[in-house]
Amino acid sequence: MSAVKDVKKTEEVELLTTPEVCRMLRINRYTLYKLLEEGRIHGYKFSNKYMFDRREVMEFLEKHRV
Image (tube, rainbow, N blue to C red; front, top):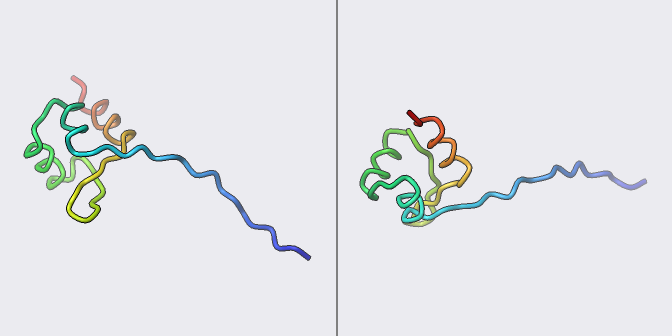
């Protein structure tokens, strides 16, 4: 008998750097860090650098559209 593994399709995540997100949102990095501290935007910290999921940044933009 052979074991069958459940293979789930994984989504590819496009990560953005802090400068890329700042350009997208048209804010400076201090404002971006403040949004991170407040939990209004989410990021991933690798070593001493933050990375952001493009999809989550786009959702943030959509959520705050006036």
